[in-house]
Length: 330
Image 1 (cartoon, rainbow, N blue to C red):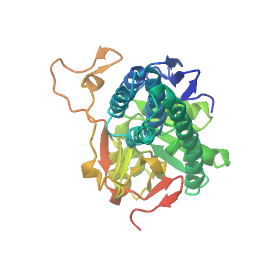
Image 2 (cartoon, one colour):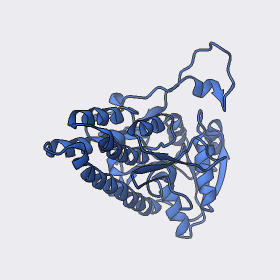
Image 3 (tube, rainbow, N blue to C red):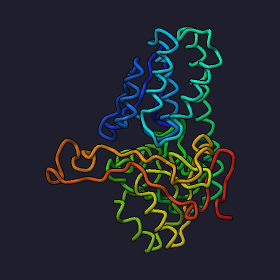
Image 4 (cartoon, one colour):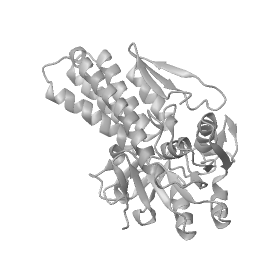
């Protein structure tokens, strides 16, 4: 890729500040675990896999700051609570907590090398998993296909080449002539600001459309398949992803367009029976009443601002993972 999303160098977590894209490419240099929590909350780093990697490195920073084991465990709990829906965040911190539990005699400073080793392992595993997702998913992509995607499930959302976009990048590098329609993804325009930006960086043919145009494009026969990522997949394969995904899946089902979800296995939550049990994060009303600091809605208007929705598994044609392709509805 022509950029990196995050890295850890000399006790600094380097994060590409995605709130500034596409206008400015700036890396945050973070040394405090609280700074990482704030970066996760304000979406400077986003995407379930990338959040998981960032959280793992935040545990290393916490070990630098904690005076004792109790303080460290408290800090790890704060990191885990940064955002509730993306399962990778809690998954990464549970591993850090398990490491602390199995080494009760070690001080935070003594535990730090083990936490750093864990974080680097999670980071490197994500890079490998993204590559395998791309290879597995590319089998579903034929030469000449037009693909629609929603939000950003690319390199910006992971430590590697992405999940949904990994499929696209791999097919593109295989020489397949593909075209991508990117939903702008209201309210924060991750599709417009991020997906369109990174696909263009890699030379992929990308066209931006508003979310409300997706169904019409399908009606016109312009879309061959939809590929999205996910922040959590329940045991029954219900999918939690960026708000608007459910509507896209309904449209795809109606128009007989295959709807694919690409995830690493770490996003599959076997402890969550179905989508009904997934906690949906609610965002600040300003995200839909303002843009760029300019108010776009009347003062005092009520808002409804969920960050995610849940797509029932019956609308999912296949789930592309690093371990293979799952058909929820064989």
